[in-house]
Each structure stands twice: as structure tokens, then as C-alpha cells.
Length: 81
Image (cartoon, rainbow, N blue to C red; front, side):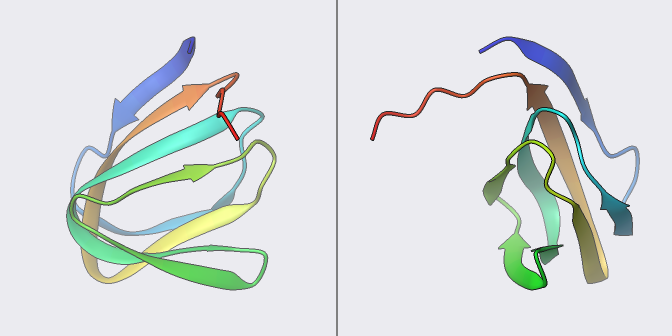
């Protein structure tokens, strides 16, 4: 896996506007809880959860309280089926 970008939220947040990436995004929630929405669907996340967003998928994250996360952007993920 070649990492293109990595980072972390600078402070507790409760919303991240809709956006997409041209690469895979791996997200690890380090505190708080909320939901990530895409394709008019939502999944819940909480501290310790991880989720992966495929390339070019518009998504947004939000929380009634707050969340913090770390993220990695990569060109390719290899999964065995």
C-alpha cells in the first residue's frame, strides 16, 4: 500500500461537508461517535471503529456531539476474495 496522504482532525468536530477523493480513504475514529453518509444511506461509527471509502464516492460525516479521527489516502487496496 502506497500512502498518498495521512492526517488527523486538529480538534473535535461535529461535521465534515460532502466531498470525495480520487483514491481510497481509510478512517479510524479515535474519539466520539457519529454517522458517515453516502448514497442516501448512513452507517454509525464510534471510538475504535474503522471504515473504508472507495475512490470517487461522495460522503459526509456528522455527529450530534463530536468526533476525532485519523485518515490515510492510498491509491490501491488489495483484498483477497
